Image (cartoon, rainbow, N blue to C red; front, top):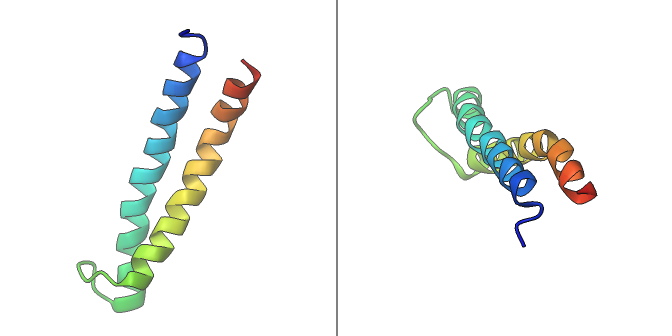
Length: 71
C-alpha cells in the first residue's frame, strides 16, 4: 500500500519548491521591468511569473517524476 510513497513525497516537495521561490522572484523582477515599481502588481506580471514558475517546477521535478514512474 505504501509502495512509492517516498518518491511521491519527494517529488511534491521539489515541485512546490520549484513553484514558490521562482514565482515571487519573477513577479518582483517583472513588476520592476514592466512598471518600474516592485510593489504594483498587474495581471500581466502575475501571468508571466506563473509561467516562469511553472517552467521551473516542471524542470526541477522531472527527474523525480521519472524515478517515481519507474518505481
